[in-house]
Every structure is written in structure tokens, then in C-alpha cells.
Image 1: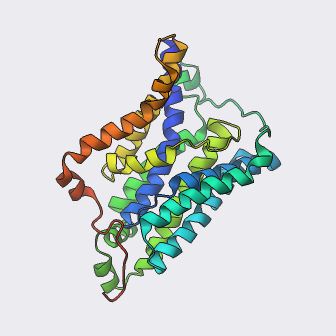
Image 2 (image 1 turned 90 degrees about the horizontal axis):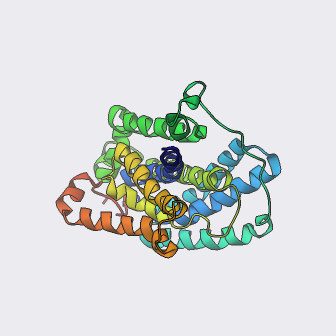
Length: 306
């Protein structure tokens, strides 16, 4: 039973990475912008956060540095696709490629660097409960903050005026512009907010989840986070559940290896990506379901006055 408790705890930690990034991408897509550069953005944020913690010893400053790096790169992406009307898909792919190369270059001197040992977190009393304590109540605070973030995003999108405006910009930017809303500025703000969350996810990977720097350490999580927004049909609560599902699949490979299951390690490493493909294939069988939930202007440029 203790092994299962540890598996659940590891699932929450692994799912947190995907949840933070996917919630950020959800904000982008609710505003009508597709950012395929999440992978490269997360890598740049990962090295920014790692380097900050190496020099300051403060993990929270590392998170802030990762968010700043993510927001900055997202702002550049936003200016290109929102004001210059470059193709969102091509620009996102270019950002991803840039992030992979730049993070590898910037991280050369940090490959052997060591981070300060992380403190052991536990919720008083609850952390000592047998089985449930190690599984649920000994997580990094960001794990719980991510759950609160999902709840806050639900309230923002569906219970606040600002959230209604954001969704209207994604559904019908022309109508929002006619009503006097600054569509381009709202979209840029959404892109930067989403970039900051992707940056936070990247910094979490390099400073808490796997506290070291290795080239390409995001390992496809940016692409899985992109798939999660479609898997969740653009709903924050479903994003959170989907993130933990994919996090569980990711950690299952290590659990099976630890229990001595005779399965090729390469096959186990494929599990998260195979699960992503299978889920997307199943969802795509019902295009009407996706069409109903997908923001109408997703991926389309906006031309004021058109």
C-alpha cells in the first residue's frame, strides 16, 4: 500500500507540471491564439529558473524568473502574431525551435551545477496520516496552488466580466472590437499570462520536480500540455483532471520498473505519448463536440475594421 501512496504522490507532482502549462495555454486559446511554442518557452524558463536558484538559493525567485522569461518570450510571440499577423502555427514552431537551441546554449555552464536541498513539506497533522499523508499531504506548495489556480480560472472565465470579455474576444473578435474593446491588447495580455504560466511550469521542472539542468529536460511536456487543452475541451477543471491522468501514466512506467515488471523500458517511456495520441484520436471521432467547445476564432488573425 505504501508503494501506491508514493505513486499517487508522484502523480500529483508530475501532473502539476502539465496542469500549470495547460492552464496557461487554455488562457491563450480562450482569447483565440494558438501558441505551439510551449515546449521551447518552457525550456527557456527552466534554465532561467534553475540559474536563478543556483545564484540566489531561493526557489520562489526561480519561479519568478521562469515566469518572467515565459512572459517575455510570449510577448514577442504575441507582437508577431497579433500586430504583424504572422501565421500563428509557424511562429509558434519557430519559438519552440528557438527555445530548444537557446536553452541548450545558455545552460552549458549549469550542467554540473547543484541546487540547495529542498525542504520537506507537509501539512501539519494531515501529513502524518498513514498512507494518505505521503500520498496527498506532503507535496510542494505549488501543487496545491495549482488546484486553486484552476478554481480561480473557472471563476474568472465564467463568473467575471473580464472573463466574459476574454471569451468574447476568442469567439468573435470583430464583435468585441465593434463594442469598443481593445482586442489586440486583450489578446496580448492573455498570451503573456499564458506564457508566464508555461514559464512557471518550466521553472518547476528544473528546480523542484527534477532539480537539475539537462538539455531538453522538458521532454515533450509542452506538446502534451497543448494536447490537454483539446482533450479537456477548453475547460479548466477537465484540464486539471487530464493533467493528473497523464501524470499518472508518466509515473506508472517508473512504478512498473520498480516492481520488477518485465516490460522493455523503451515501451514504458512511450506510454505518456501513446496515451496522448490515443486520446486525441478518440476525441477527433466526434468533430461536432470539439466545434461546440472550441473558441470560434482560434488560430485566425484579426484585422480591425474588416
